[in-house]
Each structure stands twice: as C-alpha cells, then as structure tokens.
Image 1: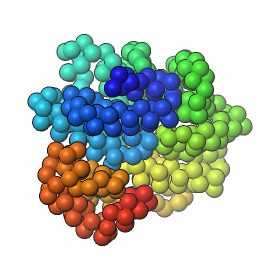
Image 2: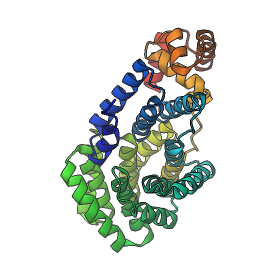
Image 3: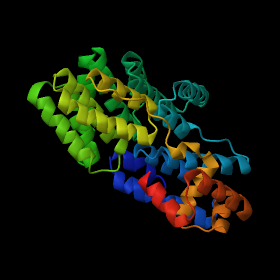
Image 4: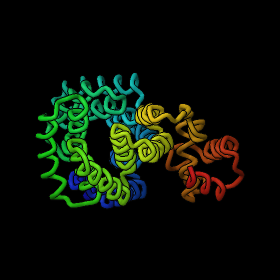
Length: 349
C-alpha cells in the first residue's frame, strides 16, 4: 500500500500504463486487506484514470463505492473526482455546484492542490461547452497551483481556451511550459497532447501534420477522451479550411466517441460542427447503460469480471441476496440472460 502515492505521480509523468497498473493493484490490495481507510482513496485514484480513459460508467461506480464505504465508516465523502467527472460529462449545473462546494471547502482548509483541480474542472467544463472565455479564466486560476499532475493538464486546457478566445500570447506561453513537461516524459500520451496543443497555434500544412500526429499518438494510449478531442479539434480546423468531406470523418469519430463516453457537451460541440458541414445529425440519446442505477452498474461490472454474488456483496457491503436482486434487474434491463452475455454486452458497449 506504500505504492499508492505513485497513483498521483504517474499522471505527472504522463505514464498511463503505470497509472492503470498501480491503481488497479492498489484497489486489489486494499480489498484483500480489508483496509477501509485506504480503499476509498484507492478507488478514487482508479476512478480518475477511468474518467480520462472515457469509461465514465465505471468511474461513477467506483466513486459511489468509495462514498458508500466512507459513509459506513463515518468519514466524509471525497467529491473531487465526482466534480471532474461531471465536468467531462458536461453536466453544467451539477458540475458548477460540485466545483463551488469543493472550492469553498478547499479555501477553508487552504488546500491548494484541491483548488487547482477545481479550476481545472472548470476549464474542462467550459471548453466542452465552447465557452472559451470562461474556460480561459478557469485555466488561469488552475495554473496558479503547480502541483503534481493537474498543472500540466491545466496548461493544455489553457492553450485551447486561449487559442479559441484570442489570447494567443497567453496560450503560447502555456505551450512553452507544457512542452517542457511533455517532452521530458516522452510518452505517447504526453507527445500527443503536445502535438494537439501545438496544432491549435499553427496554420497551414504544419497544423495539418500536427493534428494527424496527435491522433496517431493518442490512439496508442489509454486516454481516450484526449483522442476524441484531437478528432474534434482536427475536424473543426478542417471545416474552417473548407475541407468538409475530411472534416466530417473526424467530427463523426469525435461525436461517436463522446456519445459513448457520456461526454454530452463535447458531443454536442461535434454535432454542431457536423451540421455546419451540411450533415444532419440527431442529438445522441443515452445508451442502454444509462438505464442502470449506480449500484446496478457496480454489480454488473463485478459480475462481468467473474465475481460471485457473495463476493460482490462483500465488496459493495450488501448481502448476497441483494446482489442477486440487482443482477436480475441488470439482466432484464440489458436484455441478457447470463454472466457470459453480460460480459460480452459490456465489452461491446
């Protein structure tokens, strides 16, 4: 369990593979040890990784589990990743409520790292909504806190917001800092974010090449939300270059990916761009998984991983009979009749 701090260091190193492995192992060890003081923290770190992987349903389930454990043990819930998830989902009202609550609490405790994360979430939310001035203001505040992980992410948000709101000098300064960190890391995630950010401040063939590099690199890492954003930004740029056929290809990819993730604001941004190319696109509706409650989604995930009802009950602090009841409802809602079919359904979703 002493390795748990690596879960906050890996994002600073842009090392998505290690982040995935360390958080998975931390959750496993905490469960095996029955370490209820540590398990919610491990689940929260794991949930953050799933958010950037575009696995919002899994992230929500882990957050709910962490909150249930903390409530059962008399500890306050950790709303930090819930806030980040809501920002990526584009749930403006809920995200702003969570952000305001976190900012008030963090200000009272002088918790600068948490404040940086709250302003990062603000920037993500408003970039998704296309409210670039508000995104720029949030990113500026986020970059006041040079903490592990979040600072570099905030620099990337500042580049996009600055490029889209006319603050090109500020965006260029952020890009220089971002370049120092991403080049030092040298991972596909890092260099993909750098290429995407450089493309936003480039023109002509240079921008074209950088967008393609970003898509290529980000397609080789786990951070699917950033791959979707690269498709979106490239599609927007291609449309403005009057290359509508090529733009549609990337905008469709972004629209489909964001829709699958549940990133409603980014999906809507892609839909508007597709319409501007002359293509009619209906607003996406929630997929089948959206009909599951949070606890049903948790039970479905654990059952698909091969856990028995008693094991699911022990992990979620419910009885085996309650686990069986939830699983029956999952089967009914998803139209499956076995765990094998459930595993196949979730793999395709």
